[in-house]
Length: 176
Image 1: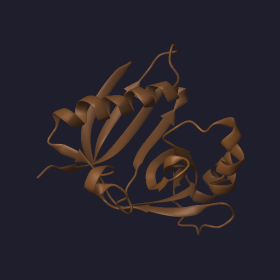
Image 2 (image 1 turned 135 degrees about the vertical axis):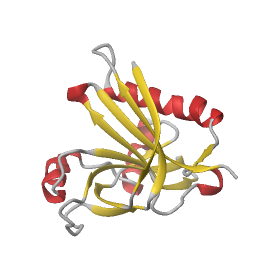
Image 3 (image 1 turned 30 degrees about the vertical axis):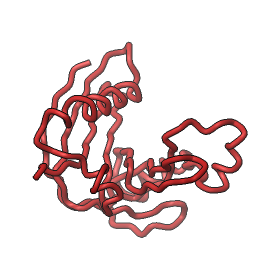
Image 4 (image 1 turned 120 degrees about the horizontal axis):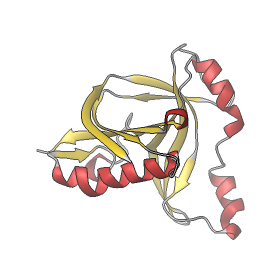
């Protein structure tokens, strides 16, 4: 896998999203009903409508837009399907609007071969960001520590399976 790393400033962006959630621990089969009652599962069947309604073709993952502590499921964090809201449409019909504030990001572009999936490449990019890049840079993450649950902040991931490429943007802030 080939990686390209840079920092990039992104302006304010509005996304049309299908909300979803994930837990930091695996949900046991006996807990699935309770999870669904509390958090549901993202309706992937809406993705084509999401693209049409938003006016965008690229589907992103927004992670950690909303996190909360749950007594049963540990940390529960937003893990949304999203398209830039190019058409400036209103939410509704299973969609919500998420506005991300302007921010500097660590941008990691991973190009991978047939031996890997986009999901695996994204996981490796994530591990590289948290375990290597962040520790050796003058930046901190805007989704952890004193910045956790900052409004209008999320990790952004684009899966381009056709080109065997994953692009991950992690919001960062220069350490004091």
